[in-house]
Image (cartoon, rainbow, N blue to C red; front, top):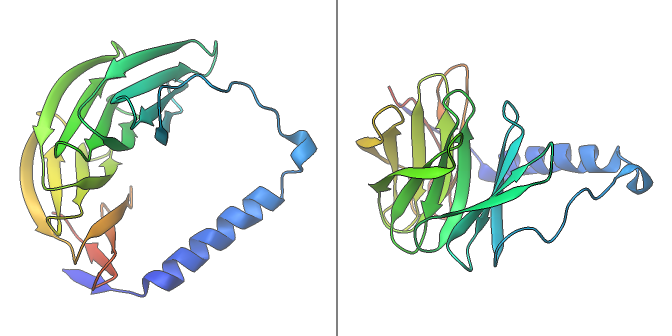
Length: 195
């Protein structure tokens, strides 16, 4: 089942919320804790609140920098070509990196900080989202016009979903499991029940 909505109204609501949050924190109350600790071309970031680790995708040198929020210590994990997006499953502590350059997803064990799998997906993956309750990983493949569904327990592809022209952003409702897919083309927003 798919529902088509105006992507402009979704983006406008999200932008308004982010603007409200940004304006509610005075600049003098903000403190820079760490800077200049990543590799070349920091491109995306995800945080596992349970482990207090941040994962920064470095597109320029095909790495992920792991930052320990408690100590600010860093380590580096090599990933596929052209890493573009990152998401974390806080339940399993696995990290998923969409590699735009070689059409793969690198799976990192967040505890060991090692690569445990590389999964082939569609062409030019630009976004990744995790459903921790169902242990599913969704990857938006912009040039394939689809979304790859990965079984997080086995790190294998379960299926591929049609998702509009050039999907580039994903969000999962953690309660219902519904997947929201924004696309550059038409339809601009598709809501999928991936079951």
